[in-house]
Length: 106
Image (cartoon, rainbow, N blue to C red; front, side, top):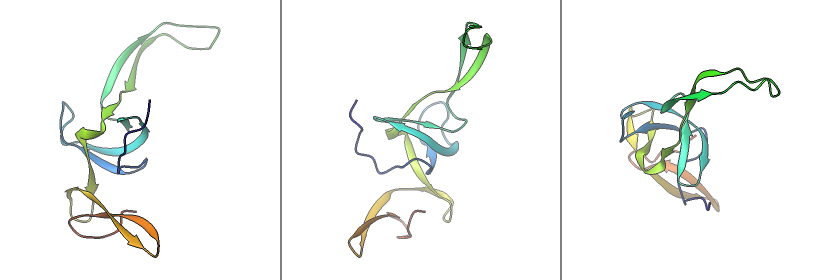
């Protein structure tokens, strides 16, 4: 699946703006297509069957499920609010900035 053109990157702190986890914050663990996995959010319980050949014990396992990128916004920790991402040209390099403050995203 082709990756959606997104301004978010792995490791960014984001806030969920829609869905059952609305208002919670976390860091992006993985981006795949137009969905991403956020650390310790959108957990789902999976019933796994034991497989002694692979060393898997059976039981109920909590697993992080993907969230649509459109339901996330980057968190501006300096301003303590969600923000949009913009770009600025710095000596031929394209850097990401917060739109409200103009500061660089680390």
